Length: 120
Image (cartoon, rainbow, N blue to C red; front, side):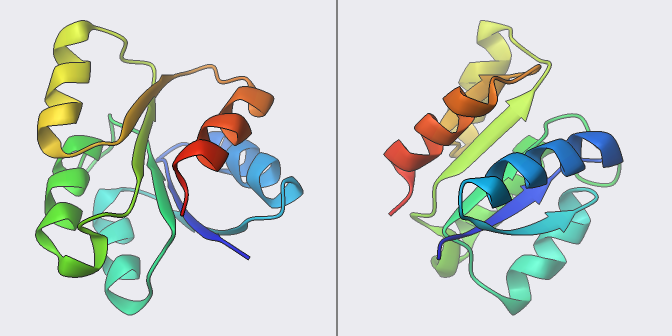
């Protein structure tokens, strides 16, 4: 079973994502922000990271950069799921090392489809 780290400061969004991914057969670990995600990523590996962009303490781009510095996450797919949709933000995401960029609100079937394409 593939494991996914789902990072979002919104409890309702975390629950929605977790429900969608668990229903598709993934093991989901939730984190409340980028800092919490980094701490969880030090203790276990994940097959994919799905993170929000705008969060307190450490945002999605900062989390992506920090994860990419670690050998354990050098090739792990990182998807940013956010309300941000500007080309400038998407470019910043790519520059930080994000695998993909998805805009909220998300279509559960589309999210699963994308994850199946990028997960190893």
